[in-house]
Image 1 (cartoon, one colour):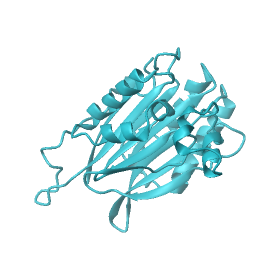
Image 2: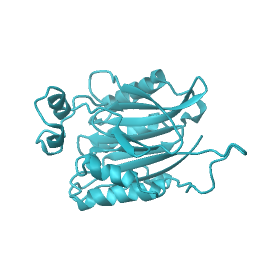
Image 3: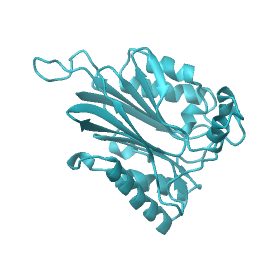
Image 4: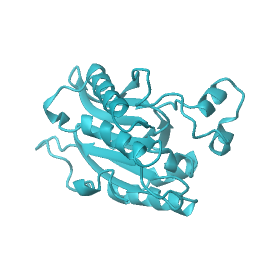
Length: 258
């Protein structure tokens, strides 16, 4: 099964720099939201991205992902400090069937649009999520809580990274969104689902989500990575010609656009 993807990052209207970073190098797609201010935040997110490059020659597994995050954690601790989220999806095979191996530390998110339905795959590691889980905060109020940006797990802390994992079937026509909280804080699920459901290429969808987050306030850095699972023509094994094979922004913009 082939995939098409698009990505965009923006520092937003308030922040002076962009501490987000992303990676679009199959089989791995990743978003990291740095914390700690210049230079710590951007250095931390870049450290995670660097560890996941050139994964096309390895068999991606939960153990491999955890090892990459442990290495990034050590780099951050030995360097400028700070911390970062890390949320991603890797293309894997299990018993000959394609899956997304979704992983997460922090409050960046992975959403899946399948058919007409969208769901959040990842679960936030945040104070607000703990309040929701405990029944002390209604989910619809979480976006407006004053402690919504406080995470309970991150890469770059004294504790070794322990990401959550999900194995999600990779079906033709499905669409993944990986995003920093600059998207999910500004836009509710209904708005995100509406854009993900548009019959447009992955890059157009990433651009549209970014623009909507900017229009909604753009109070944080904004990063969107959209990945489409394309149908395959059984006659030649190639992706259908009627699908837009969008590709990511140039490497020079990967998490370093300011």
